[in-house]
Length: 246
Image (cartoon, rainbow, N blue to C red; front, side):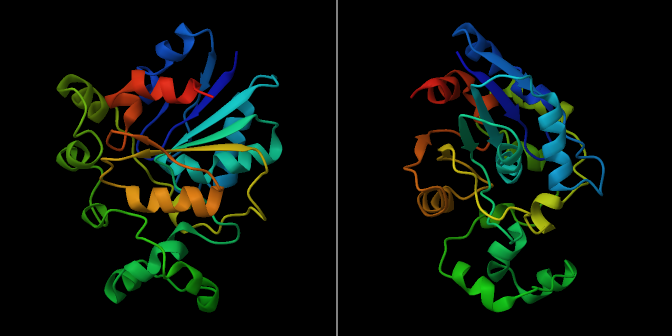
């Protein structure tokens, strides 16, 4: 049986896995999760990875699951700790030496880029991304994720009403924007088994981009799950089936 290390995305925390964990443990698997220091505006990707590493028990069969933002973190963990598999759940996929913003800046207008004080370090290096699909769904860009109505519409639209309200009440303040602005410190993606789960009704990470990036960045055929951005909350039973399938 495996140890599933569950790494949460932006605005969430250890609580967001509460519905998924029973399904994994019912099959005999072990789980571990941790709160990332997202309220710390100066927290870096490496610091996030260190928190995950410190929370991992010693075992040879680790499946490292990263939701959304955590896609930028789990490869850093896999550089330092032996893991069997990386699983990206509607996740960002880092590009070594490039920030997430670098990858999608060409989809933003000049005023938005100016408001972000964005200055690309090497514009010619970014041309390779210009033919890629948009990473984010346009309706989600620039939205205030501290607003409950926005969270309901973009994060939790396919959740049961009580689950959605509970999740909104648990939402955390995302102060660290390292997953958007920081140049990823990887030199290459770690050479371990990979899986990518596309959330086909995702209103934040574009499913079209997810399919493209799974093939292009990870070299895998994506697994499609009919869910919004947070399948661990909207359909934890189905997500558990995908996570535990070979």
